[in-house]
Image 1 (cartoon, rainbow, N blue to C red):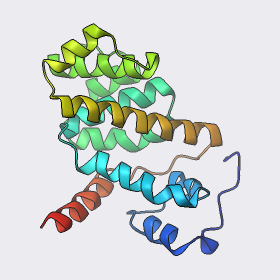
Image 2 (image 1 turned 45 degrees about the vertical axis):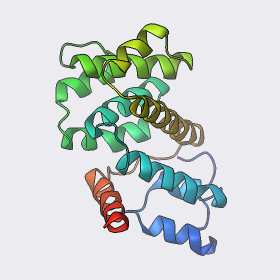
Image 3 (image 1 turned 180 degrees about the vertical axis):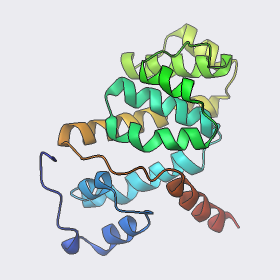
Length: 190
């Protein structure tokens, strides 16, 4: 049960109702976030950018996202993103390894291990070591490294919101959310 009540969305601003209407289904995380009306749109836009406009490979993004939220204790985002990761090609052994916090398992490629170790250090230490940065830079461009840090930080923030306020898990939106974002990005670029 949520630790503070959800806002009455019928009294929310038009902008808030518009942003929430873009989702494939209602989501407790964004409903709770609607308390901070002026933050909802920028947060949702940043989330859309992280899920639909990065150079970072989508499956690698999801593996690192799952690692970040599991390390942070974010159950809500874990539940939402496991189906997305699987849909993008992640394997059940990879999901199982991340659930146990094992980022060096043999089911991960050299690139995945480097990115996962880098993510762990950023999440746990707030700063990756020189060795982890050097290793991840063998595989990722500077842009992708920065995207990885921003993505991990964003999902840590969401985990802190959901866990602190007791936001109840929703059924996974899965790839419906990603497809909606991709459709909007394509329409803007087309």
